[in-house]
Length: 119
Ligand code: HEC
Image 1 (tube, rainbow, N blue to C red):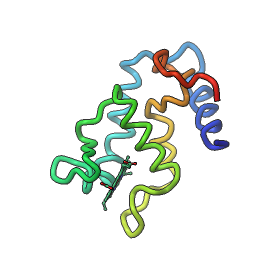
Image 2: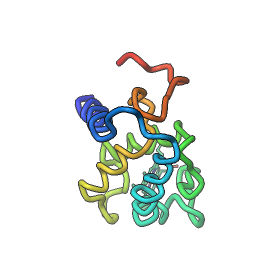
Image 3: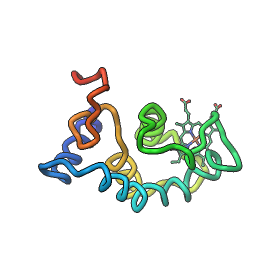
């Protein structure tokens, strides 16, 4: 859970106040996150293969549930699987920071619907 806190802290300091508008988040997602998913995850979770019924080419910023799972996998280093093209620490960080992790509900994506405000 320490890492989750770090991620949240990083998010806050990186964005400062006021929170970035949604457009901005979407732009950064496309710029910073999509390419990583494409190079590291699409092979098994993309248009061709949908392991675990997951197609990241279809997952958008709004799909918090999918992200929550995905980030957990990345955080615990479960995904990408061993023997696959591993994520660099920058890439891990980009994924963990630039996606709407529900546990970081203070961030700009306003997870007001998230039930987990208390950790
Ligand atoms: C070499 C193939 C491969 C790659 C590359 C890969 N995965 Fe997976 N992934 C799998 C398989 C296989 C499963 C298990 C599916 C199942 O059990 O039905 C899985 C399952 C998952 C799940 C579901 C876990 C659950 O609890 O249901 C998530 C989330 C996930 N992967 C995220 C990712 C992310 C994010 C990346 C890129 C960083 C990635 N995967 C890259 C093969 C891959």
